[in-house]
Length: 255
Image 1 (spheres, rainbow, N blue to C red):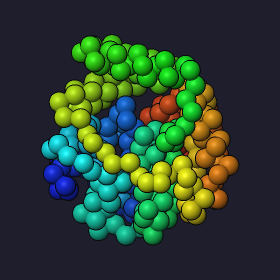
Image 2: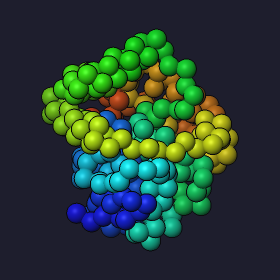
Image 3: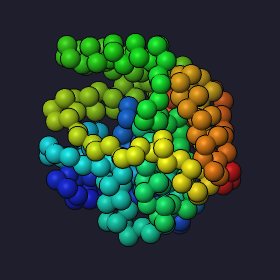
């Protein structure tokens, strides 16, 4: 697997297919493997680039500050990409928004799937989940923290999806407990820059996702200047993994 060297890290990445550049940024509960079904559907239409963020998959890194959007820029630079279609899922959607806000010249169009927003007023239910997850991790109960995330975010998905998410999430937790990534916050946050993201944006959410993320999707669709909102039926938090055909159709159709 190739690696891009940047700021004390070796970012693992993969390139598949030929055509216009399509760059994929994975969810925080996943790694680049979450994109396998989507890549299989689109590799004849795009050159598809995906990578593991710090604290996930095969990427290695030393302690110290960094920027997730900066890491994304480094991957694009390593591959001489000067224009792309950018897709981010969950936390990767937030990274994609931050990248589009700070490096708009590199993004032809954007898709964000069930993305969070900094400063969001989380519901009591989600606050309780975050607290329970943190308590499990502090107690060293990684398997319990994994179970909580699988149930919360892909509990309605097929068994193979839940199994893969469990594997990806467990690896991420173990990597992050060894050396917690210290990502710099964008100032001002991207939630205050949405009006400046002028390229076409497809805002996507799963029909069965957590209500907070559905509400965030509606907020993004309202505040981004050139956004369209799409609901993927029979999907929860990871539509690209659960219903890859539906997400592939949205990417190809340019809606």
